[in-house]
Image (cartoon, rainbow, N blue to C red; front, side, top):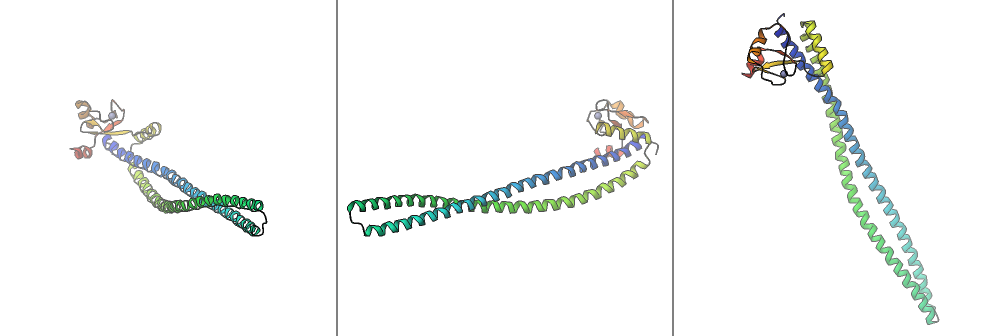
Amino acid sequence: MTDLHEQLARLYDVQQLDAKALSIHRHTRSVPQEIQKLDSALDKFQQAVEAKETEISEAEKTQRSIQGEIEQLDEKRNKLTMQMRSVKTNKEYEALDKEIEFLDQKEAELEDHTLGLLERIDQLKVELDETSEQLKIQKTEQKSRKKAYELEKAELTKSIKAMGKQRKILCQDLDRQIFDQYQLWMKRRQDTYLAPIIDGACGSCQMKLPPQLAGEIPRRQEIMRCPVCRKVLFSTPEINDEKE
Ligand SMILES: [Zn+2]
């Protein structure tokens, strides 16, 4: 294989493989980050569930202690009511009555507080159910995403291997010098090296080439670069035919 354009066309196939491999690497690198994002979303739901559970148990504790206070007030009131039966004077009676009234008032306040707490507990339980449900959905999603990622990774590893073999075969007959130039360019610029001529234009930057140059390139056995993007131009019958 001595024809330069045949060489370049083959090197172009190598370039396509390298581009594909690069995009696979980029993709597989981005997936763990996506999984990490899902993980932290999961953590947030987990924390929200725990916070709701704590809030509920705190509220229930407060509610129980208020209930205890109410019971104590009831006991006191019962005692006062008993005392009332044995009072002798109006003054004593009034004093007890006032005390009972005070207890009633306090109990009413505590009852209000209890009602408020019970409402809040009900609301928190609804919220807890919702958050738990979301957590469950996220967990399922996370699991299937990780599984899909593992499968995808295995697939991609397989195709990277196959591409490596294909690349080796393609590189076998390549001119060493051209191949080295390609490798060097790719390493330095992280960009493609070759551009096919498509419809008389550079296949990379799309610049329309002077017709004389475009017509001349396929017959020239030397490296010719696009005047604009500096990529090495080559002509392949297949690519030009496809476009016509
Ligand atoms: Zn160009």
